[in-house]
Length: 133
Image: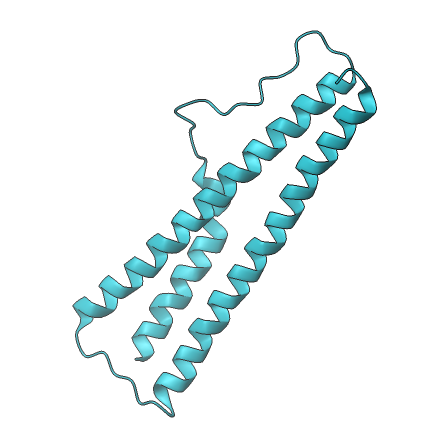
């Protein structure tokens, strides 16, 4: 594959994968947040759900938040991998002799700072809903 347009097409495919995954990530976010809101509403009105033990509330809340944080971590690693491959392909299209390495290091340091807003907002919603039940 020495033709630069082939490398550019591969870079475009990597960017398309990032964009597609970002849309999926937002669909999951809004679905989870809507499910939490519906649980709060129907749990208090129609179903009359009550979780009497604070231990169960905290355990359930931490479990939901841990699953959501794991989802965020997996999405971020996939984004980072696709972005690295995109830059690798663009370097190859430009004819650089030593393109950037597209592989993530074996011990990739995940930066949690970018995940604080969605995980924090979800944690706030989870514990607010559980406090209502």
